Image (cartoon, rainbow, N blue to C red; front, side, top):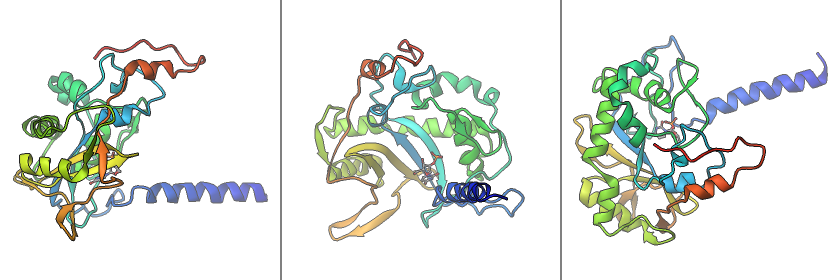
Length: 271
Ligand code: U2P
């Protein structure tokens, strides 16, 4: 084996190890090993399209960012069974995603649970596929005993999403979708706490909300997401968020003008 081949092998092994490590927190069991233990609570993870779509550089029919009307509500990322120690199970039962099982929900899923990217999502059991396939196989299969099958998983996520409308909770607390307006992180958390009955977890990207998570116990009652104790009381553990944050909007036309001449000219897609 030449030095160059050896180096290539070491690099390939390292890439494999590193990609396994990159999903820190996950408690994925190797196939064939003993079942993962029952989860402790659910996190309904919502994404703020304004933050994600601002970085969109490529459009396709399946990307929610490329619709002619900007998305101005939180959309669903996933319903995640989690452990109280900050880790989570993943890819639990070898049950492949089947679109046929959730066909009656397709229209609602397209609207409120769109992928905000063009790339296909990696799945546990069926190669690469839809965003929904990724979420079902990675998280849905670990949601027993509360959720038994795919249809129940998507129905439950949608039910919780509509019952606890975060976009409305924020606007009733005078926190509106706006361009550049800053809100105190503590005000956003308090508004959700007050309306929902539990502390959310917020993830930010460059000062803007990227994700907001609501947590539920296994009876589906609101509960706090994981918290850290601060001098001024217990607040949600919010990731990468400064004291003041924004909920930006985006202009789909601006996304379109960023195409370079070699890309397929894309029309704006209607939902
Ligand atoms: O936060 C980065 C990615 O880690 C996965 N995650 C995070 C928190 C949690 O409770 N459960 C969980 O799975 C998410 O991965 P995804 O579902 O997108 O594959 C999240 O995007």
